[in-house]
Amino acid sequence: MDTNVLVSAFGTRGICTDVLHVVLVEHQLVLGETVLKEVGRILREKFRLPDEAIQEAQALLRREAAVISTAAPVEIELRDADDVQVLGEAVAALSDVLVTGDRDFLDVADHLPIETVSPRGFWEKLQGGRQPGGL
Image (cartoon, rainbow, N blue to C red; front, side, top):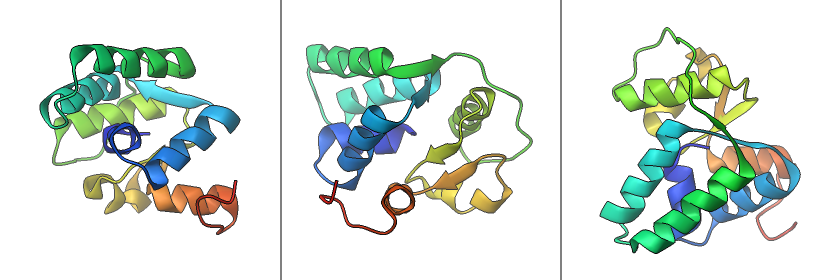
């Protein structure tokens, strides 16, 4: 999962929350250090959460996820250099799928070295097209 999916899962109720729940219960969540840092920054700057809440969210993610600190080299240009790092960390972790709402990833998904889907696409893949709430 990338930053925007995790921030949405923590900051709102909806498909990202449902996806995170299913991943934590039924799959192995893999996160890179880049995503963990970005989550803290966005929760602080955009959601204005107190440091204690941010630390709790990051502690939960570190406890429940396999955290990757190295990135594999990837030969793709993306607008944001941090996105290249996020992709490289997902590849280095041998992740099966990158779940993202970031158009920069989704627009070039067919050219990426890892399956890349939106939260809705991931949900549909896991649930066989059932809507959230049908767990």
